[in-house]
Length: 298
Length: 254
Ligand SMILES: Nc1ncnc2c1ncn2[C@@H]1O[C@H](COP(=O)(O)OP(=O)(O)O)[C@@H](O)[C@H]1O
Ligand SMILES: [Mg+2]
Image (cartoon, rainbow over all chains, first blue to last red; front, side):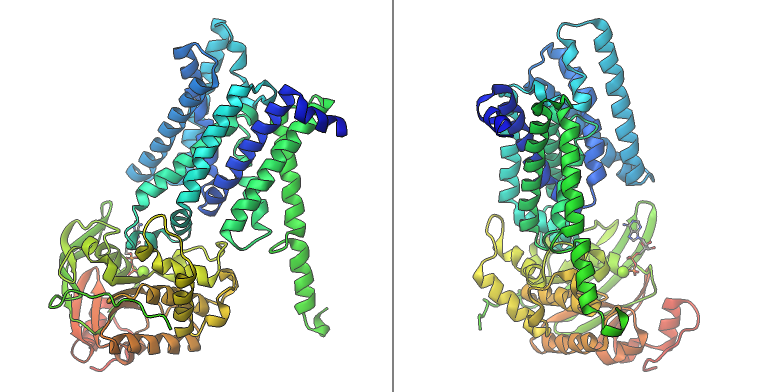
């Protein structure tokens, strides 16, 4: 273990992987709280899958594997996915869950087709693109980490500045509208920030699993507190811890993929929180109920 | 005791004036050609069966939903120019009470309109919110997570939030729905206090047996406006049956 810590500080690759994973853990943890509380978790999943065709098209247009271009393509594609979901829900009788399913499968299907086409064409450097499916944290280089950090930083800044507005939007949008807040604009903004969190995560964790980093740390944090601000902080902490732990386990020689390991660590934290969480953990509720129950009922 | 600057409403204009209002969800019309005027300082019940469009009426008045035709004026102007004089109590079931927040925090949301962007609620806002909780008998629950409150207590938190808005016109959506006796009395006392202070309250109400006791005026609605006016004149068996379609258990004046 000390050896791995030593490498964390001095090994270029491991440092990048751990730092990148921590950044995506924090971004997913913070934005995930709002996604979960607004019951938009599956929106995150649909938008994550919707990034794939954008990544491929960006690669075909630019011929570059630089993460900035690919992530830009991913963002545009996810945005189009979000607009299509909105258009379907507003313009037809199809409900949101079905709209999410349609966008998720159609965009992901298109992405896989493009991925295959690129692989067939044998374009130089194509070998890297399929890393977006399940993520490849080990391939993160320093410029990737800088891009992820900048994106996550901007998203976190927006959440910090608009915290009170986002809280109101998540809790009581009708009341927010009556106060004159531009609810539609805030809604689009928050959804866009969720897209940013997804974008930050797809290189390391992949489009299939990245939603886990939105949902699991937030759901874990909810077990420990009844305050949104505290929940956001705990969720960020859990996300970062999962990221770093996943990266280190992966680097410690087990030769297992980082993304799935991060998700597994997050799931471990979730199970622990579910049982022992101070506010709503099963163990504490059980003890409370026992204490509260009158003698005869024990 | 912290006193807020009283929000002054423009004199001479009706708190609420609805003219030929028609509203629809997609193709489904919900309100047809509804017109009425609410004078100042009155407690007004909006009464009608489920699906009569009562909530929709409030939504259109507040500009949350655009009418297909007609308009609503608040203190003689469009809602956007009058919202600082309006307080709103949404239907209790419209929010997720499992949200991670406490009673005091919810009440402070009533002050966000005055805080504006960027500024956060501080000590002053906390004190105002505490006073509002006290007015509805909820100060001891200020730090209670909202899911741990009873339905009646949750309703009183919503009322306290509206009080924090210090409005001239209050729009309330079924505040009496599913509350305990104690909360019901607390709400009635609060409505009377608001009336004494010259406030106007428009309150969606579902319990026909208490309409005459609680309200000065009534708006009877069922898609169309059935009748509107002082309770004694308008809340008759005939009108109520017209609104509810057929015979109802009626305990009104006529
Ligand atoms: N968001 C909506 N989309 C479509 N139809 C709606 C929506 N909200 C309400 N309705 C319909 O409009 C009618 C009036 O609803 P509402 O104003 O909530 O009635 P009330 O508050 O009087 O019970 C009902 O038939 C309801 O089904
Ligand atoms: Mg209603």
